[in-house]
Image (cartoon, rainbow, N blue to C red; front, top):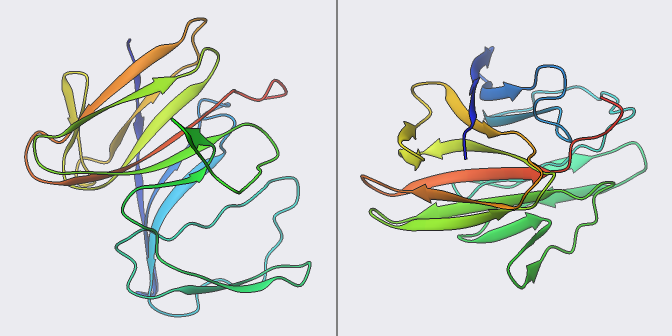
Length: 185
């Protein structure tokens, strides 16, 4: 199955916030608007609205501490770092996340040892993109890491497909996002 290459972007704000981000062009990542893998070492964001979207904060295993998250409906909680194998949103095999997003999406936090591989089913009509977190991940015949600032994006297809990801040299962490594109984009 062929895929497109999306460009990742770096951000650095006052030394307290560094990020590698991915933003979609005209719905290319739909149902996602964008994703940021960021590092914070102090308060970074003032209160701000998330009108019309559902924001999900997920802390990866490389997080040293938790993050306090407060929202406009009174939620005040500590988000703790992720685990080794997680399905934060959606379903993978027989594992289902307790989170219920406003549309069907899957977020897989994948860690592979050197030489390991994983086949990920991609449902018909779903897009998928892979955000490299550390190490080199191989998708098809191409390799991706955070230094080359690229990510593979699989557009929605009429038939179900399988995506093979590998850790060709050293351990790798990659987060996979998938879901059906929103029709109004």
